[in-house]
Length: 346
Image 1 (cartoon, rainbow, N blue to C red):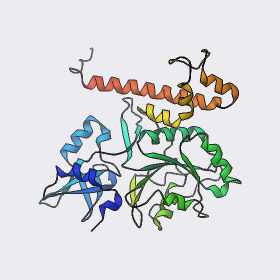
Image 2: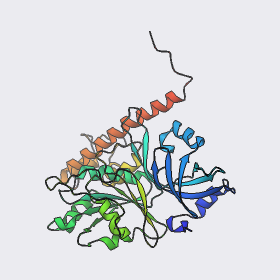
Image 3: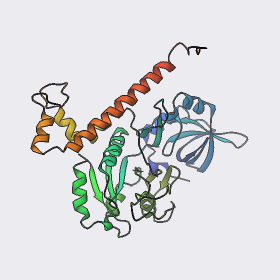
Image 4: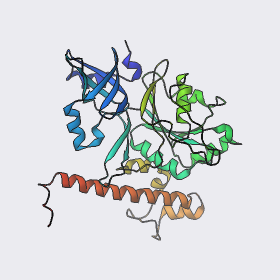
């Protein structure tokens, strides 16, 4: 028997499950979601479950409704020994990125995590723009972000690098870690205690799988060598999975992400750029464009050096991206709610 409370099952989930409770049903957490099939851990063990028609119908309206690693679901066991996912219970948090399609739909990378770790290697030098983008995604998820600077043994003064990254991460802990030397792992383990889930987000070769193996105390995720020239490597993890940690808690490992599209992340951007957003509220005019207007607090900060031009430009770029994608998404939803499609012209 599995203790689901060690994975985060609580009174809120139990209340949501109560209306679906029946003799042939059970609750469980998704360890891995493949095409049309989920691996689910329930109190009585691990099940391979296909998706019910109800779940598929909900996903047809919005792909984000598909179950993913970390979801809590209701399983139904049929007399012919089939098991199906009947319901995805309400998510507390969710990492959602924009897909590459023109309709600006969302893809859920992970669900029900307490902390999202933006994993960035120290070799080569950390990519500031990538960290900012991933932090916006992490804040929007509803979970608490943290930045993990891996491979700190490759840096001469890793704490100095961490202090520099702190400027890009207001209100976020930045930890320098090295699995090879065991540095910083105790601080990471504090994020994976019974009932709590840590999600890892970062590019391929950042050291996510190596970190998961260190936390699990055994090799549960494959690891590949990366190129010394640019620190890049092939995608080691090809799927999202929930890994149970001895003693309780879990880690959500995600595939390496080359690019992350933002979708409806206005609040996440304001949290990731709390320094810029805070200055903007001090401008004389509420609609200040920070481009020559009198009494602009943002331009004053640029002038005295307390705000870097690169930081402001990154903020503007991501806001433009979110505005465009939000417009596309609104148009798609409006079209779906319309009276019908027009007949094509001949």
